[in-house]
Length: 131
Length: 142
Image (tube, rainbow over all chains, first blue to last red; front, side, top):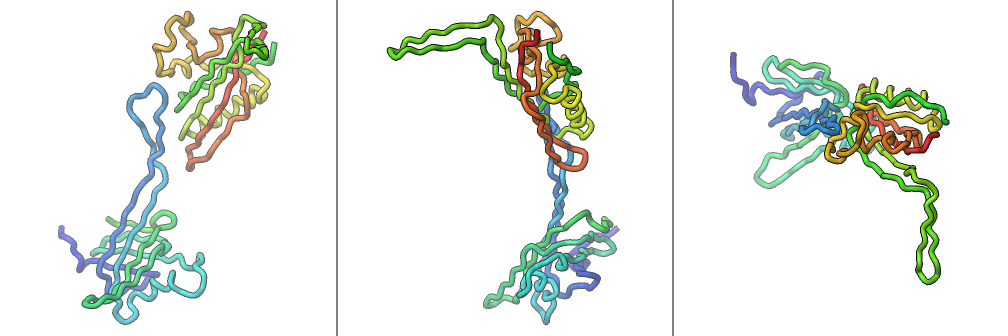
């Protein structure tokens, strides 16, 4: 058994590992559908729809974040062809699936390394999960 | 006597609202403001019961759909299943109703039967779950 830390983390986009990733995070939520009926004193629920979304920050070193940014920041319209396969890994563990980049943010400030922040939303179920 | 359909399926509702209806009659109002009311009958009618069934299973939604069909839409009259009414949640509201199988949400103690006031509405929530709303009206059926 082992602990994991940032040095174990990877972000892979369409099979290619993205360089200079500073951090990533992922969040999975499930909606609840209320099934409480008359006469019941306690609310009851069944699982509803699942949402998986996440974010990542990539240092702008060379063209490291470009492949992600250009899914949103471009002259052409965003289309279904911009859905990409993404894999978040740590050690031998992974979560992967198809996602849409919903936000791309570039920041450049005095005294700081330029970096890009992206947020993504999974579409469909994860295609692979090893926890 | 109208066509009688099967009893409403025994499905507990998520929410319910009741309008108690009224006795048949006419109100005349003179220009000086005097009001005269003439009662035509001694039985109340037009009781309205609106029920919503949120996030029920497809199978239960199908029971409601099939019941509407079995009642020939808005034509047939029917009883609301005793158990559906037992799930009243308002036992104090039913004091004095003699029959053990009905309560004040039922039209039966007041000589009425329910029929659909309008076609039921179904919404798909997710695979396996649906919501339905129905509106019933109490009619005198002799």
